[in-house]
Length: 458
Ligand SMILES: Cc1cc2nc3c(=O)[nH]c(=O)nc-3n(C[C@H](O)[C@H](O)[C@H](O)COP(=O)(O)OP(=O)(O)OC[C@H]3O[C@@H](n4cnc5c(N)ncnc54)[C@H](O)[C@@H]3O)c2cc1C
Image (cartoon, rainbow, N blue to C red; front, side):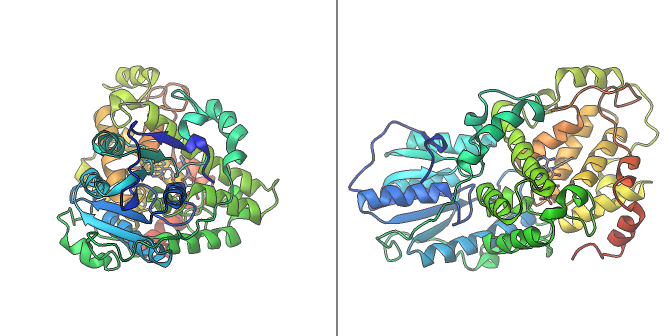
């Protein structure tokens, strides 16, 4: 059953009982397990005695996406198509603007169900579909544990202000979900032509997109690979997560962020499996759920309630803008161009290793990300340019980039969700973060060596 708080009407039109199917327009929750939108579509289809069709629009120029992101996504959609087929549900993958594809498929639908991403363009597309579809349209929030407006009705200033609100409701939403096969199959319905989702490389080849950033071999997209990684994490690392999550090589971080970003895994399922696997008082479990629920959902709160979440003027709090402005004229011992940074060509071996790992692997451990972003602040002429550069590199190379976590964590480096510290050159009262913070947690030289030798990527 899908909790009422996950549902929102996108228009006040009625369902059309004469439609051929219930349409689930998939965009954010690219999976067939623990997908509340899919579950709701099937439940409504059963009542109407209709089949379910799942539609997905793949566009050429998705904001800030390149071949790396597209490959991971299309690998995931191949899983979605196969798993839906097993349930007797037709997956229609069409080349086009997502909202246009949804509206086209909505013409023959009884009603439209969609999932919920939080960035501005995802919201705008849903608004378009709600407004222009001729039938009822309902949004189902499926990529979060506590629905964002249930947790809080305002922009929260820090983890400490949202933690209790989330944790008080958390267990109401960490509920088991089994998604049945619908009574009526849609596999033989006519008029539903589309691309062959099982041939993800073929689909990738025909798209017009930025191919400069190559797909990575270290992560394979999709819910099957995501499930395997989740099981390995639970078996091998969950118990040690609190102690070893900051170690980038042989550490205990889950590496689940790309799967969460593309909706291949549900945070509800991850939380449930972790809770079922280990004693409730385990420090590893507490620490992991703090990151995967509280911190992640704080980021979603930020993107949901801060209209300019992707701009320096909106993302950086006033106190931090004031102090960074006061220190704008300070001397910077090193200044690097964006190109020099991208080429990992700085005097700093740790930073170069981080940038190399990011370019080659599309992933970094959280503490290394903190160090990486703070140096960009030191090495650019203005805080505005530092913010723009960090976001640009983050979203270009990380598989989990372009996520609410991307915008909120880059903003964190500039004071968001944080407090003032003792004043220093260049960064003013914004939190410092030096290599000493890394050296306390792991063997930095070993990390640099392993990145240089390509030995980290296993
Ligand atoms: C400068 C900077 C940039 C970042 N950019 C991104 C980004 O583009 N996309 C992204 O998903 N995360 C980003 N993060 C947050 C965090 O670093 C990653 O989510 C985490 O490293 C992903 O690795 P993991 O899945 O192994 O994490 P784990 O340590 O295993 O954590 C499990 C999950 O908890 C969540 N989580 C962990 N740390 C954070 C955090 N600090 N804030 C919010 N949620 C968190 C993530 O969903 C993560 O997958 C950034 C952090 C910093 C400091």
